[in-house]
Length: 175
Image (cartoon, rainbow, N blue to C red; front, side, top):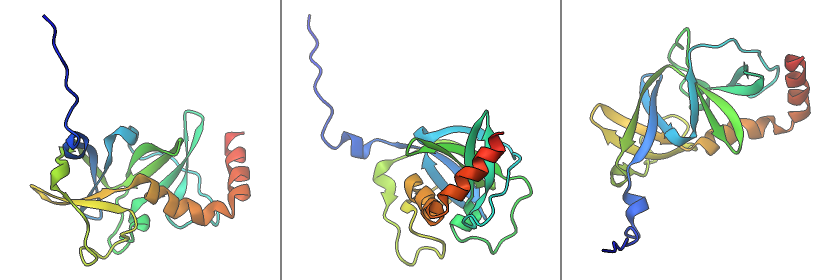
């Protein structure tokens, strides 16, 4: 007896649930693609980077790898609320490089139905919209889906002109 396997429908990938890592920043819920997340760490010691973008809180030494830590409150323009004392580090990969997102609290890894993801509207929120790629109305409120590449490029492009200084600073840390 032979079994024939038919290919999935053309719209299958578009309708598949999106596995996301959800977290809080300034009381708002955000999510990133869970496949990009490498690990989650409690508060870590960081080395400050002089004259870096204001969202770069510092550099982490993660088992010999230098990882820029992006303060999501600054990156998203949510600095009006007091920061938590010991943020959580969500370490993820973007463009082959590791980055840490400093968030207030990790919530969970969840499947978000692709069909329920909507485009953000211009009047939806007052924070930085360049990195928001979608919005999901979850059971506990809105979840803003973030584009990791946009998050990273938004802070790294402004420091690209200072890349020599940053590389020299990173080499000093490694010694």
